[in-house]
Image (cartoon, rainbow, N blue to C red; front, side, top):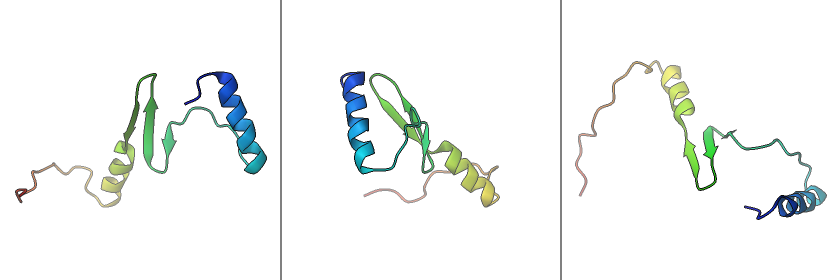
Length: 72
C-alpha cells in the first residue's frame, strides 16, 4: 500500500508509461473472487462463484456433509 495519495499517484503514472491501463477504483471482484478491504485487512471469498457452480450442476439445494475419511 502507498503511504500517501501522492505515492499512489506516482506509482500509477509510472505504470501508465509502460502499460495500457485505467484506474477502475477500489477492487471488489476479480476472477471469481470477491474482495473486501478495510484499514487492517483484506478478505477474499468465492461465495458467488460457488453458488453459480452449484446452480449450474443442479446442486443448489444440496446439504453439506462431513468428509467420511479421517485424516492421518
